[in-house]
Image (tube, rainbow over all chains, first blue to last red; front, side):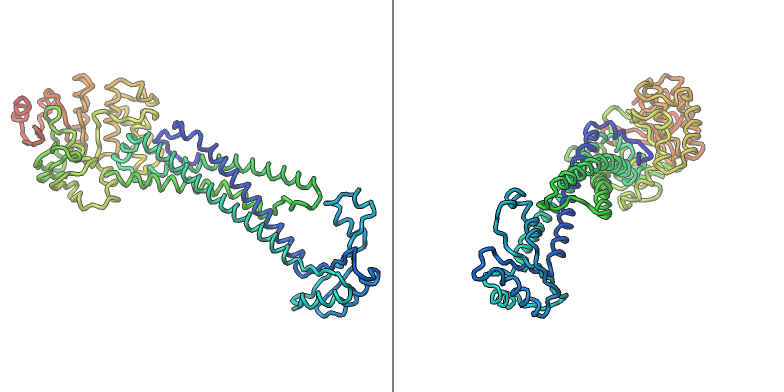
Length: 292
Length: 230
């Protein structure tokens, strides 16, 4: 109980009994949206930091000319290019391992022609002309493809940011839903207890005294609902994380949260509690101002 | 203490229920308010305990014009007024002692102080054996005494009672009258709206009389009794 006086029998209101459950659902939705957004944001950061400053050069299996000389030629051209920190040719096994999540082991075990890949790391802040480098590599190894990951990464980041925006919209909408729920239930309470509120008013209760009873109860119920919603969110996030980890393919971003992100998630019920409390206070104060 | 000057009051767009009401209650005075049902007694009391605003005229309480008083100052003024409502207006979910203690709690008094004071007052009105009873289990007379105890617990400067003896027998009525007189001796200004002519006669206090929304009086001594029969 967060309120000391119960001059108004608010806990007997039928609508109020549902408030914790309604807010539990709201917190659950907000928590899931936030957890998804934070997971995705972390994944995008990993992709971004993992791929920026790198290039991949692919020498297709069906290279025109001599494929045996294409790789050493390309490597030589790369080593001679300023701004490149390292260039490493991936072995056939490494290339096969990269394709395994998509094609499976059985497909790779057959005599499937695989391209040769060169993993290139750029020097920090190197101003490299990607177009010029492509021409240079293609001259050394005809048919070679230089991929700076920018296009695919940009598309991926765009998709991730869109999902993040949708998650933020969900969080904002559920916050409004929480506000609307508390306003509705507070107004119902005001109507049900109008006589007793008027009595308190007439014996000298300030508006704040009456409002504190509503806001205290709203905080209490919202926190209860918030804790239930948070518990459901935690269970769901852990189960999703395990399910994603069980796939183990790298097809999905890892559903895992940092300590700070767990703290942010735990703050959702507190935020809902505060929203409930402030909303109830504003609603009651607004209604009481109409009294003489 | 209380001054009305040409006060008129109407509910919404309806006819005036009070017309040109003017009177003055000096500090420490004791008056009765009489009048037939519908004469406007309850409306007059509502104006005095600030439940309504007048349609016209001036009302001054504790030497302040209520029309110019900021809204935030009104709760403190209301705490100086004790009201016994005709329908008691007890909180049914709260036991007797908590009902009586309500004005002190609203005023922010200490918890222990509140309980002691409420217990003492309930003993005074003869309800010390039902401190924990809930109002729905009480008789009309008991409820009335709880309502009176609640009205006087904070030692108000002004006590307004709307038919405070309507549900009790003569013995209890006289006991309640003595309680009001004792409060009056301590300095509280008292105004009691009642139909109980016997009570008015025995108290020998001046009477204000309302008829058709208009006030006459105050009548003193024998005239107070005569006016009621007129």
